[in-house]
Image (cartoon, one colour):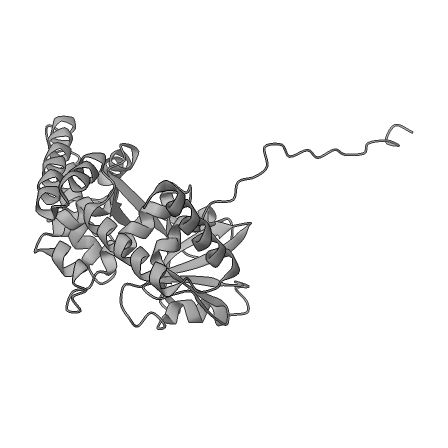
Length: 300
């Protein structure tokens, strides 16, 4: 898109997001195509450059595998004696995200190790930008940090294109062909984690035996906002979201479901196209917060 056209489209999409009105069907279809392409190419500059120059996804995949090789090489240099298990953890991210509960489980490393022994590893992967952790919370109350669990978390890749490359099995073509036998939930969810993190949101998810699991939970204007990510056509099914919104004691006013469909509203739930994650921006406090106390009369 030319810059002028692109800006007008983004402005129109933002208006649809803010007013909760459907996007023009033609624009929606094209935006979904661009989003699916993003799932494959990702945002690594080298991979994007290869795609723009060639439009060849095989060449993009080769570049992504080269980047993954450099990652593993750098990890090996840092963890020469394999005491932090960095390569093990890095290589497990795709399979752990594709598991039923998507939670990172140490026993899958086939090592007799405790979480405390690996904690430094997860911190290192996060701090160098290789992985994005999302910790579980026990309560849907702000501030979410107070109910965060340190040793229960999901681990996302820093780039969804690299994640797709790790999956292999021609997942690139399967995404573009909308193959229904494949569950693309993990790549959709990874893209959501990246977008929310890029906008300054701390990543949390909620898991409760009674209510179920919410993919993400963020804070907006001091309120808790539950978010679900749906890659299939049955995006109107969201038991966990229904449970928490129907629970008056929780006091949660609304929830977002990001999916393949167009904008729609049903009760407390707004359905947004998944590409509209770019508008879930963190609302910052004003630069100055001035509060003056009247102390007159205290000395009388």
